[in-house]
Every structure is written in structure tokens, then in C-alpha cells.
Length: 342
Image (spheres, rainbow, N blue to C red):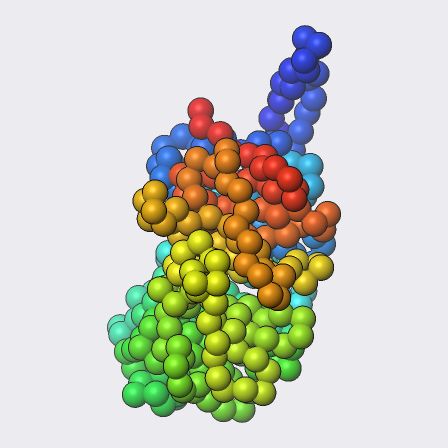
């Protein structure tokens, strides 16, 4: 990070020169592909918004300006898949090569125990800070990890059976795609090979039945205890508390496309969905659900409608991250872009 001199030109022709820590609009950094996407987002306990990209690192927005975190701040892997926070306010970032913790503007890579069977810094697809202060992260090749003050615990799932792995002694099977915690403290896990599972603090359980083996881009619990699952091909799935049946909301109900990548529950209970587009006939974009009806949101002004992440700020604005380095804010009426190319 560095201080920058920002020149702001007003319509009257006056120029204001001010010293600012960050920037009011994100410009694609030199050397970063214009296809870079905003892959994930997170709102921390202080109300700051965090956005992870696949090539430009992480940006924090404090309501006024954006601050970029990259190599200079210790975030040496700029392909970011997930962001979370623990009970002490530390920010955790899952990347293509390991997981990083951030405090006071500096990031440090977490050294995960490994053996000859393990890649030293695996792909970390999802990060979750639970109610007990643990950090969970799911990987592409090393199963599920739990990290706490007492150290690391590694779990793997083979043939639908979970086992604790000691000191990296076994090769892992099945990527962990997404994680979520429900209001009862259960940790929900989606695996490529074993579908939907949860951990109740003592043992693992698998959900069976229709849609239970979906590939989940993201999972999240809502305020009344439903578990929402954003899937590849199956739209949005909802698991109600105390039930083992999963219902789905698809294009038939009004979702723009069944490739649903992201979810956020607004303060008023509105559910927001982002979909991955594929050409003019299935463009993707943003939808909202009021509990009865799915309504698509106009996307005029968006350069790309492949939506990867959605988030609400403390003022009720909806933030939308897309492919082609696009970050937009929707105020209920119109879109404002916060990204630009040099």
C-alpha cells in the first residue's frame, strides 16, 4: 500500500488535490489480465467490504475508498477464491496456493502440516470462521482442515466415510467445494465426490436424496435456519431446518440461469442470487427472491453478466462482482461501476 495523490475534477472545472490512503475507484493493475474476475466477497464485523479477485489480489472498501492488498502486503498469491473472518477479527484468505491471515494491513501465509503425499500449499476453495473461534478451510486435494489455538486437524472423506488424518499420512480424496455454518453451529460441507455433509461437533453426517450430490459454488444459512446451496446446473437448493429433503428453485421459477454461483440475504430478508451467463440466450446476472417470487434485476451498464459474487453493505446497497474485472453497486434503481481499465 502507498499514499497516492488523487486528482478529482468537478464539473465546474475546479480540481481538488488531496492525499488519500487508497483509491475511490479500482483500476486494473499493470500486468493483470482483463478477464480477471471478482470471485468472492465478504463483509467483516466492522462493516468493511472485502473483494477477492482471480489475479489482482484483495480489495477492502471502508465506505469511502478501496485499498488493495497484494505482494507488498504479504499476499503473495493473487488468485483468491474465498475470504472469511475469525472471532478475533483476523481476515482469512483462501487462494490457489494456500491460505493467508491478515491483520493491520499485513498478510502471512499459514504453514499447513504436510508430508510427501501433500502439496505444501494446496488450493483453498473455501474459508469459514465458526462460532467457536475455529477456522475451517476446504481444499482441492487435502480434504477439510480445522485450525484453532490447539493446532491443525485434517479430515478426509472416502467412500462416504469420514476419518481424521494424522500428520498428512494419507492422500486426500475429493475436493471440498464450499462450507457454511448454520445457526445451531453445524458445519456444512459440500464435496465433489460425496455431496452434502455436515459436522455436528462430534461426528459427520451425510444428506441423502434428490439434489444431495450437487456441486455447490457457495452455501449459506439464513436467519430462520434454512441452508441455501448455490449449484452447478441445479439452480438454488434450499434445505429447511430439521428436514432432510431439499427443494430447488430453477429457471422455471424465474432464476436467470441454473448455474447459480452466489447468494446473500439482505437485511429485509430478500434473497439475492447471482448466475453465470452463457451467451445471449442465457445471459446470467442478478435475481432477487422475496419468498414467493423471483425477479431479475436489470443489468444495463454491466460489461459482463457472469456474476460470481453478491453482497449487501450496511446501507442496503447490493454489490455485484463479475468477470472482466467488474464491480458494481446497485442502489435499488441503478448500477454504478467501481472498476476501470487503464
